[in-house]
Length: 245
Length: 140
Image 1 (cartoon, chains in turn red, purple):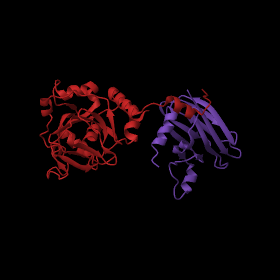
Image 2 (cartoon, chains in turn orange, green; image 1 turned 135 degrees about the horizontal axis):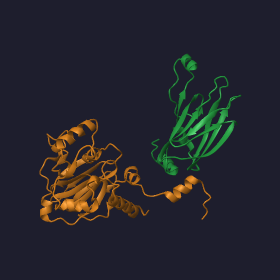
Image 3 (cartoon, rainbow over the protein chains, first blue to last red; image 1 turned 120 degrees about the vertical axis):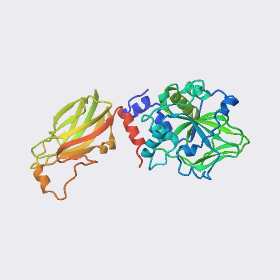
Image 4 (tube, rainbow over the protein chains, first blue to last red; image 1 turned 90 degrees about the vertical axis):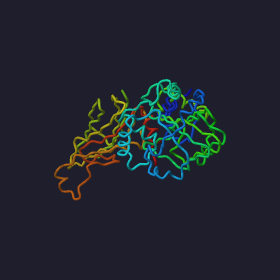
């Protein structure tokens, strides 16, 4: 092989490798299907994930009092996150006063400013499944469930983050009855089937969800350090598989 | 050690410009005797470092000048990224006091060193990656 070429080109050819920040932040890919498998939850494990609290009130969304007409039935519970909620929200208000940042990016940004922990015990289904892929809690920013009842929906919207986040949300379709839609503007619907795990970019494009089935839809959302060893490998593997790289 | 090559042009009548070139760990001094000077040296560089070129003998009568033409680090021409460098002059006090309005405290981009002072460029190793990341993050 003739290596008599400029050093910049030679280094680029020989040293080029996969960079998680490039894949997840620069490319603006709407989603990647990850080769990850969560054990099928039992009915009682799913029942524990039907959210009863008011997610929008908890996060102090501006329109939480009036039950925004843009959201019907969508709700969530935190399984891992900040333990001193009032303090977290105070920090959050100080840091994000001028920004409309979503829950994942707030938890990521404030990860080292206050204590985070699990709100469920070691035998909890979700905790055991998450630990398979992210064994170190310091690599987790937020784990929460999202439930959407039959005929529930979230209007088209776009989420915002502070630091160029793109592909960031690990999204696990624990219960995904037929006729559920996760639409992404200009890209069709994310091809989610029950049990799938996707890495989703909710920051670049408007998106929406709608449950047109007769049953509850349950997903898990994980905001994590995408450089953590197993997750990093899964993202690179998915990128190679999707783009034939 | 990392190879660094600098092409520095000069303008002067009698007082050849002198400069010191520094990284965090190394320093070398040069007298630029020609109109076109090619400097080849090796520097110890940290992963994140600065290249400094300090013009040390400005002669206001001679009006000597150093012009940075090209910078090659680790055998890679850093091309237009040298325009990311900045020059912080140390003005001749008498000259400065006569100026109205006052000249800036820093020039960027700047490749012509017309006063004593230090030009510096932030670098990151490996250089090939720094180049590609600069292109990637260029939002023009």
